[in-house]
Amino acid sequence: MNAMTEDYAILKHGSYNALLFDPRWKEKRLLILQRDNNSCVVCKSKEDVQIHHRQYHFLRKYKAFKKPWDYSDSLLITLCRKCHQKGHQIYDVPTKYI
Image (cartoon, rainbow, N blue to C red; front, top):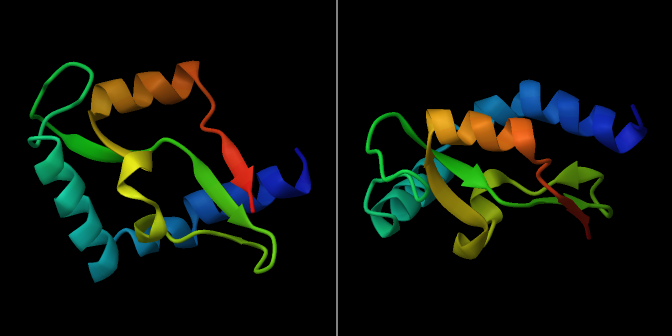
């Protein structure tokens, strides 16, 4: 595991989850859900929907990942839990280093 992967693992499992309770993320999440008709863009399910980041951005200057609400809407999609988990098993979410 390289340093970037380790940083991501810490962020993903630690402080990142806390950011999901931030009002800025809740607002952004609601906008994406509304845009996607509160449905999974893959299977159209409306059950247990989540917002998926299609790409992660690591800000080299700050040695940190971008906050979840700072991504453009085009990089966020609504998925049900099942499609979200399946997608992460099949594909790695790309990280762009900025």
